[in-house]
Length: 82
Image (cartoon, rainbow, N blue to C red; front, side, top):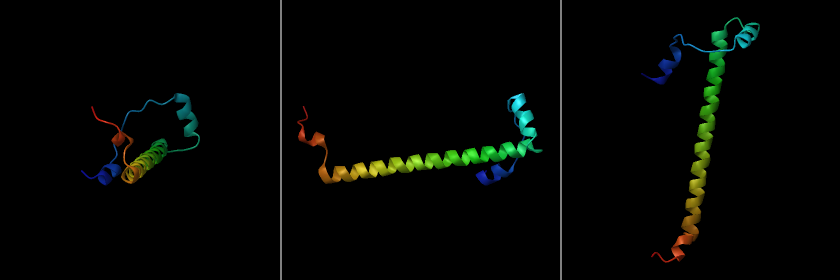
């Protein structure tokens, strides 16, 4: 099933939340489920961006190291392999 379809479907889930925090949140929203879903979607997007940025940093590092290796070789090349 495509991911986009899964994002549209809804089902009840069990969450354990602080009673006091829920009471406070209800003073700011009349739809706690929608608010939590919005915050969770923002969190997931933020984590996906962070993971993407981390992967890009790794790819850049590998690319830079490969360029150095191609230009100057490896320090191990100068040592005798016993």
